[in-house]
Image (cartoon, rainbow, N blue to C red):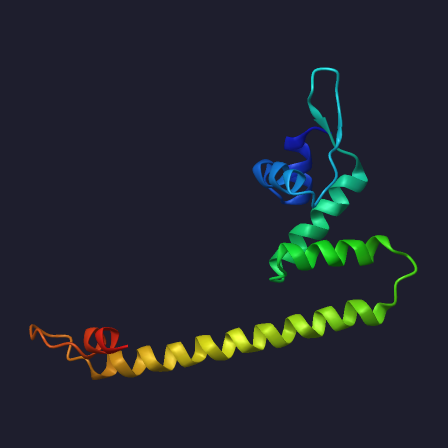
Length: 129
């Protein structure tokens, strides 16, 4: 299939497919005599894997590691689980940071009069940090 077909089948845009190829995340596909890329079903499965990994918030480096584990039939599932648990811990940390940001902004918005006065606790806070 061509790059457009592979993009539709995998959920990854053609631009991102070319990017993944340029950084070595996916192998360069076969090409026609005219130079057009040709993708196999396995290439599409790899792209789907990457797409799902990105949707779960894994970085490209993490996806590179996960792809290597996926392709290694002798790998221990404990290695994959350890990566997933480390990613969950990182997500928990980011969620806690975002919840703290939300609480702070909510407090600032509550303390702002929101009228014609020029004084604004939100701007004051931004200026003092």
